[in-house]
Structure formats: C-alpha cells, structure tokens
Image (cartoon, rainbow over all chains, first blue to last red; front, side, top):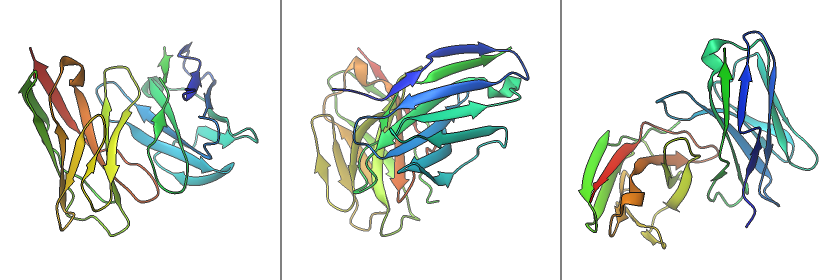
Length: 113
Length: 107
C-alpha cells in the first residue's frame, strides 16, 4: 500500500540558506501535519492543513511557511536557516473525520552547517 | 492541550507481556487516546487508539480506565522488534507528542 512520501530524505544547507521539504500524503487523505524532531527530542508539532487550508499551528518559526496544494501534497519552506533548524522533519497524513490513525513518512533529515 | 504522563523507561524480556501505563487525568470527553511508537531515525508508527472501550488489534491491546483518566498499552508477547519509544497521546483535533516511554526488550 502507498505510504506517506517525503522528499528529499537528506538535505544539507548552509546557514542563512533556504530549504524546501515536500510531503505526498496517502491517497484520499485530506489532512497533513508537519513535525520537527531535534536530536534526542520528542516530535514537535509545527503546522497542519485540512482540505488545502491551514487548520492549526504549533511552534513554527516565522521563517518557516507551508502550504497544501490542490493535489493535497504539502511543502514546508524554511528560510534564513539556523544551526538549530537541524532536525528530522516528519510529515503525517490522515482523514480528518472520524479521527483515526496518523500515517507518518520516513522523514527528511535537514543538516544546517 | 491535554497532557499525558508516562514512565521514562521500562524493561522487559522477550516473550513476556508488557504493560505500558499512561495517566491523562485532564482528558476531556472528546479526546481520543492514541498510542504511537518510534524506532530510531524513523517516523512514528501507529499502534492503537480508543475512546472509551478497550480495544484489540494485531499489534496490541488498549485498556482504558472507566473514568478515562488512565490507560494501559498491552503488548502480549514482547519481541526485540518492540523496543522503541512509546507515546501515549490525546487527540481532539491535533496530535501533540509527550515524552514517551522508552521500552527495552532483552533476549
């Protein structure tokens, strides 16, 4: 069965550069969530989308933005990268209703040098 | 957001049952109780979820207290592949991870 696809799997950037992460949810899933997980830390919720509209926002820096497109894929854009942005970024998808399980991708590992 | 409390770590031997507790005394009536587990450098994996009644699936069982202020994830026969961090999460409209329980399984 198709899972949540994230790309790229690994990304290395310099400070102050820009990075874009992509997430392709499971077909027919209408909700996408983004999480950030630093080394040895628990996943932190960043932002979520339902039917291409932002539905909730967590601890997402102003330097980050995201959107969900008409085909339901989502992109997380990160600008003015800082060393502290180095982390695993997970995308998850689900059906909004009824609330069921979230399916997570393998993650995109961003390293900022 | 409702909070959950879990032990930092637990240990088990292979083939033994494991009971992972979770306290969620501030749970509201609409919160679902979800469990996920995460292996190193992998995305969290869904284990089980429930609202009021106990639930069973091929991976585990979920026992929910009558007052819903606590729940227990039951792995009936632990295997080495069950070693992971287990997160108990309350969901109304979004999923917020807590600190989780790191389960070690010994052969």
